[in-house]
Length: 211
Ligand code: AMP
Image 1: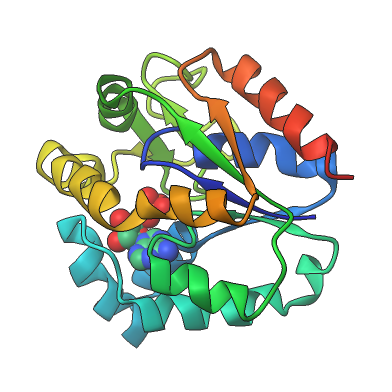
Image 2 (image 1 turned 180 degrees about the vertical axis):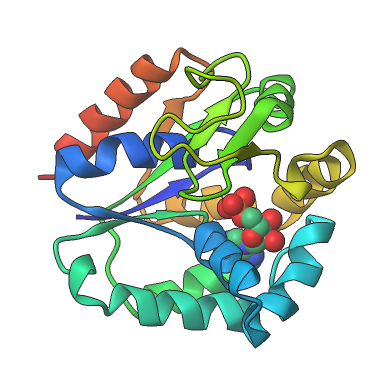
């Protein structure tokens, strides 16, 4: 099963992907996570990507396309995957089309005010990347990851200025993908303005219909 999770930053794509992947026996491929790993390692790629990420801008297409092409070839991707945060532009979607066949694209929808609240309250584990929210998904102990005990931090790009920029970038560059996949009859919409468990349930319903 090869699926794409589409939607604005903060809508919950990553959170839902982490909760459904094991139930389906597939992996989650997040370009954001891969890029953040490179930034942490201070690799050449990471240094270049950081300039864009801190500003809330997209990393150039040729870089992320190369990352994805390499990642989907790996052994652990054989049973299938959820692409979380890729593609984000039409050229990325076109490059993907030439490479692999996608079964479904789930478009997660929620009003902008909900998204802004989710982004500004999001906290992530600095060690394992687990996602929390100060109100909606709080950790058992404030500031500490339930899974690994790592410190919870706010991403630089979850701060107000970067949030504004990222939402604009989404509207300009990523939203056109909704039509792109509608035309290919691959798009299914999931209402992401619901309780997390209900979003997960609706997502699983769509994904199980593929098998
Ligand atoms: P995310 O964790 O998906 O919100 O991604 C964090 C940041 O990584 C984005 O704001 C972009 O700067 C960069 N990024 C992630 N995925 C992509 C992509 N498909 N194309 C370009 N930039 C990306």
